[in-house]
Image (cartoon, rainbow, N blue to C red; front, top):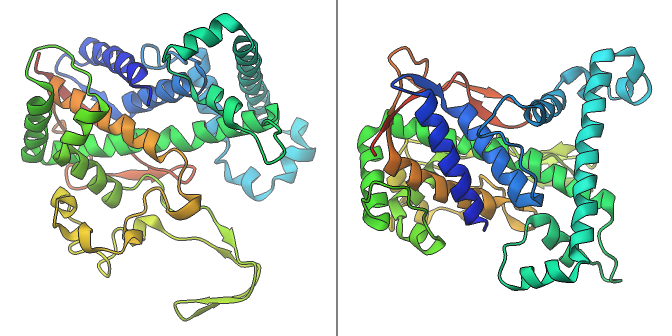
Amino acid sequence: MPLEIFGNLTEKLFKVIDNTSNGKAVDAYDLMERWTLDAIGNASFGFDFGAVTDGDNEWVHRYNDVVEATSEPLYTFLPILERKYINWFPRRKKVHDELTVFLDMIQHIIDEKRRKISDSNYQSTQDNNKQKDLLEMMMESGEDENGALLTDEELRSNMCIFFFAGHDTTASALSFAIYYLARHPEMQERAREEAIRVLGNEPTNIRPTVEQSREMTYIEQIIKEVLRISCPADSLITRIATKDTELGGVFIPKGTGVTLSIYNLQRSPKVWDNPQKFDPERFSPGGEAENKDPNSWIPFSSGQRQCIGMNFSLSEQRFLLPMLLRKYKWSLPEDSIHHDKVKIELGLGVISPVDFNVIFEKLY
């Protein structure tokens, strides 16, 4: 896990919060989006979007425009419009041009990484425990049974999947954690006390190690309960039935698209006690979750198709939340639309909070 990257970005984030809050509410979801975009960019292939320090720069706009365009329903239901008639739609054509620039950037980084890997001096630094980014590890381990490496197209496609699947989801998870701790200040204080107990109470930024993260069991319970009650991924990717089958007494003909609603499963009263209540104690030792079927909690799916970025996302949350708790107390502003319950919107299969403003109060 790239803990050094997480630490550097978190300290940049704190400076942004300090410079923009001054007792005023700031858009917490925007901050989490910027932090996770830089985290995955730097950790995946060593590209810094610079989103934390400048959320309005060219690369951030380019990335956001491409992501937003993928959810436009007209082209989702009528893909032929952009496959054959793209020049009829100037606005859509511009997004395609932006995507080309984005993919060219990825290809340039792949080319540079190949050049570095072939350099003996670079290899010697890597041998000295220097952290490798995801792209480099994919290049080294991406061999099939015939010894063939992943092609550039496969590398580009995999990197795009990591971006689109691992950016907004973690930003939403962190935002929902901030929300529930704002709604429940007693839980926020208990989590803060745990972070201070493990990391110390020196008035300075302290970066948790993997071992220290394992000691913060209550924060872990919070993370899991957030992922239960407000899972960023609303459903699994649709599968196609390859033969006639039956599930739970329902006949499913061959060729039928089948999905599962994670959101409804994890909020079902048939599965969870008082499911609308935010209760981290569910995940305490001997708690409710301990006796559940493992498939009752599947924010990252399960089995061999489980989300490949699960550990990366959990590591981001386990790292940022303790540092945030030691640095700030936070609350919802009086005019927040989220006082009764969190207001959400559904993007490209990702649930996120709307107009999520928070007041951060510095503790040191």
